[in-house]
Image (cartoon, rainbow, N blue to C red; front, side, top):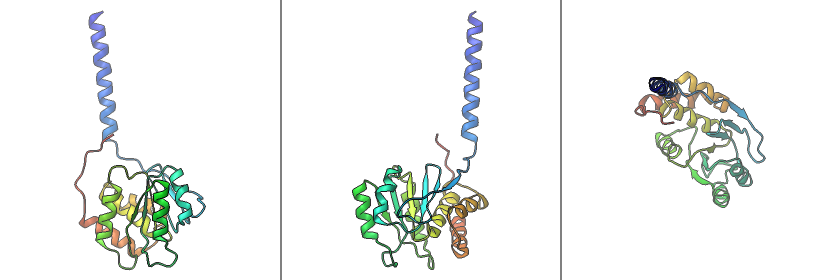
Length: 193
């Protein structure tokens, strides 16, 4: 009887070890992009529970974003853009209890510095799930495209498919993103469950 108990315990431990190894070795699966309708937000798209990308967002919509479970609001609009209300959105985010970041990202002259700042913010503890947006969703989805390639180590093809579903349409921003990813690859990190 003792031998059977030990054998059963060994078999169980081996099965658990094999299962854990398989889970840790499995690649991160792509999350489905779903469209949503949020009053005060244009082009709202969500990726699982991690991120949502959107276009123009009114300060009045920020409280709804918080109620959806988001903890950070990352705005890529320049304060001088027509229709951008960066100060109003910052105040609304503070009132709703959201962490707010304005990282101006010019689609005509994209900068590595803006991407560097975004990657630092999006990977900081406590900043996910995050809502990221610009005026139409193109810049926001481009930033997520870069994050997928540089931080998550996704292939260009896989990351592009998701970014397109999120609203990336600019060939110039795609080119910028690919060049950035090729020159800024982050070291591989072991995935933590």
